[in-house]
Length: 248
Image 1 (cartoon, rainbow, N blue to C red):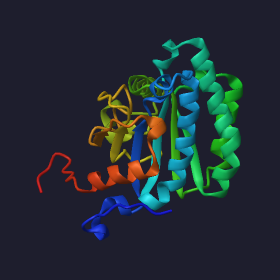
Image 2 (cartoon, one colour):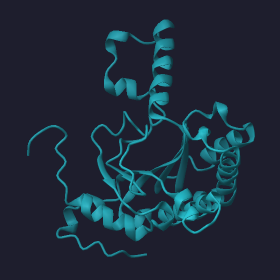
Image 3 (cartoon, rainbow, N blue to C red):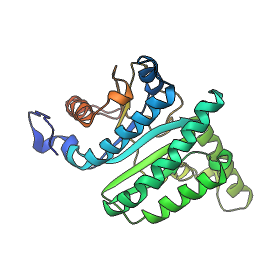
């Protein structure tokens, strides 16, 4: 699989070094379907196809870590039909893709609070994480029942329990040590956060981790988002200068 990236200096372009962490807010599935007169769930099913395509393309476009916002803690406000449909879609995706991910070197993680999810779905998550735990070609993380504030609150409670148990000295806590209580403890912070569909909000996504991430907001609805779209975004990202508060 090849993509037209047209970089001026590909040898120094981080988008070609196969180590990028890109996080995506996959927005616009429902609007994509509604615009065509179809049920919103049709858009979500199309969006799932795009996930598969993008995961397959990750090694070719320089992404090693891909983190996708699939269902937020606020998405429970949607209709029962849509919520149940999404949960069914998550289960179907894992059943269909688990074997292929294992064969092709994709490690899958689920982040978010699983307690509210159906026990059968939780078991599917546990199984796919175990089956792909040794893979390292692409790290696919899917955020389900995830909210950045909720994650930080859960991390604070876990740290507080360790303080109460004498396992943690509160005066020794740093941003690095606190990050070990987050859902993403095994992942690097995202280099780039992409949001589709023209919205320009962060929507409670990776609030701690994205403190110094670059952002791209695109008008493209997620079901229309192709690997080439991502390659074009990475080209633009590769031209940016990241200073992390310093001066070059």
